[in-house]
Image 1: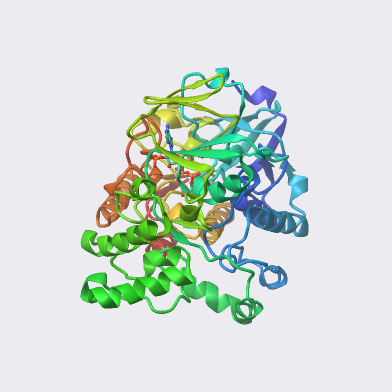
Image 2: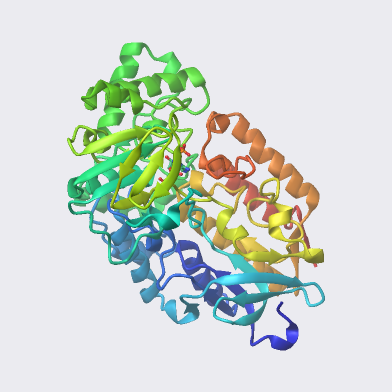
Length: 536
Ligand code: NA7
């Protein structure tokens, strides 16, 4: 246990993580004259873009939108090369930002924060790291990311497997050579759907183990049209402002969306969907405004995509296995480059592990209830313990020794996704209960960082030491997040938004739906003197 007599360093703020959130937080705190130390587990900056180096890893938000907007020179200077930035390009971008702002000198890499304990007497957080650092900080800021704690199924026999196994979210830095290998990919979420076409090209044979068929639309990735880049840069501020008013904080300049799929005739819908399908990407889900609100409307889009799958995949049995049975977009819609086409290759097979579940790994491969598969390499594309996993991976103890794990045992409880009662001065950037993964992450991060930094500066100016949410504000907010979600079709399937992908994780809808409403609420809270918080 940490103790005041062991403390080696006193700082105003400790920041955990050096992804997009931690880097921007460091920059802003430094600028505000707040002393800060950042700890990062990886050897470099980038967070999710540092870890997810699997082949084909790419952002599903267009590159002109997926970047910081706090610095006009930065956004003017940086040149994206593709419509959707690849993982290496995003990693190059965040390194460019970190170098330009000279951030790395305040980031301690290869160091995890293992424990953060509130010292109630001093009101400060005592922070222990894997490197043996012991710090005392007034503020503890968790910039730990929403998709950073990998979910590897607890399949018996993992240790007995004599081949190579990897997880897409912890991809080896020197890559994986699939040449001529018998490869198994477990999972058919976004990471699988992006990597499968590339792995199939290299592998001798690829078997995909699918539990839930997923919807995917073509990304139509391409070199970024210089005219598009120039147009956005001609009014980047306006472009950002328009996006800020959109439900997901993105897609503002996409033209032609309509209100209701049900008001259109079948022929009109067909033309409409075809147009969006051909333009590519997740905006397909925004083609009609009611797709995530009305099951019948959603079904028209689902059927369109299902027909596309049947048209693409030549083997009818495989095609039927690939037809999803949930609401389109309920699990995050994927954007692919040749995913369904990959199943037409002779060296690719699809196995349904919902029907015949995975039973164990064997020295030579993998066993389902029905069959043995000999494999040289297994890729776990099995996703993340999203939104709460990284936070609960740290031993965080607040008032009266309450652990965050106990506080959140029935699901995360926060006020605005920023703070949780019992843990004063501990902030979560894009925490559960904030738009986070249902918004464009970078603007969502910037909005949270700006709010937190303004709060810290305001407290300093007013000689206040501590901020904590009230229980009534937290309770109301948790109810509100659920009420909003229940107006939509999002809670209707077993998605990671609900924690349903991780065994025994409480089933609670975690992101807040509606970026503009959320931003307005955060601004209102400040305008009303930090309503819902107690500051002393
Ligand atoms: P996802 O979207 O959570 O996908 C994980 C996949 O792995 C999904 O198909 C899961 O099936 C499958 N899975 C998980 N556990 C198992 C077990 N035990 N057996 C078989 N199959 C399993 O993670 P991704 O990394 O692809 O994408 C995460 C986000 O990153 C994505 O949404 C984008 O925002 C970027 P399930 O559907 O749970 O039945």
